[in-house]
Image (cartoon, rainbow, N blue to C red; front, side, top):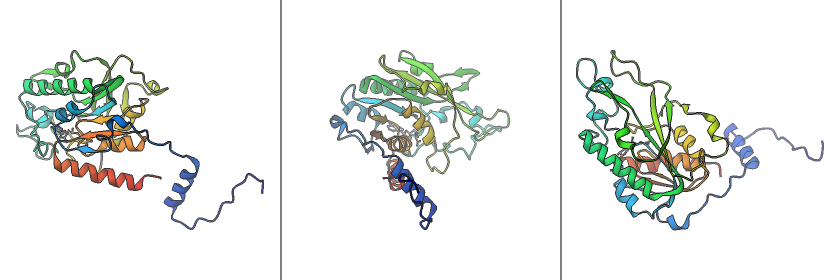
Length: 281
Ligand SMILES: C[S@@+](CC[C@H](N)C(=O)[O-])C[C@H]1O[C@@H](n2cnc3c(N)ncnc32)[C@H](O)[C@@H]1O
């Protein structure tokens, strides 16, 4: 045996444990950074209104925002949400709205609310920070509702298409919807992480599975956004089931979560704890 060779013992422990040991030995994760000025906010789901929480944060303090707001989907004139006979499709996850938000605001009010949310996000974002704002385009009254009424005036740098693998077809008269958009809204000094630009602007990622929240995005989507950035605390003002926090944990980044519904806050905490238990430490 050469002096550098490692003795490979017969595997007695379960396969997973062996793999974990091997990974642990080969890659030591760097320490998670600690942003002292945000100590009382990080690593927590703040069970409250998004704007209220953001107003309490210091200006220009967070590096990245990854978020998917309520889409106001129940205010839809129909289309994919109706079942073809005029009624709203009963199996759709969001048919009842969220637990504390009915997702059916008058359109103008919704746009005003989302613009106020974006204004609050821009205030807390560092000068080298970026917002990944996930939304969905739809046709209403025969016209494309591309959400430009929400994002106009904000520094939208690029639109990424999230191509889901499939979806639920609500209506036999419509093609199956398979994409959503992510607005990259960036402050002037924002640069992508090295080589992140190579992945292009169409991301093919299957939708979330095994999640009881009515409208989660997949961990991989949040992970892609976060890993395309170099640093700073991650904020999700619409944290839902905790997906962004889990992605941040995987990437060893600090995070702050906000969610209005106590039901989803509990769901998020449970998911994050379960993830932390399986984390290789
Ligand atoms: C599209 S979901 C986010 C899902 C999340 N990305 C996930 O993967 O679980 C939007 C969330 O915003 C929450 N919400 C609605 N109004 C809110 C408000 N004013 N402040 C904070 N959260 C709110 C809803 O309860 C819902 O969980």
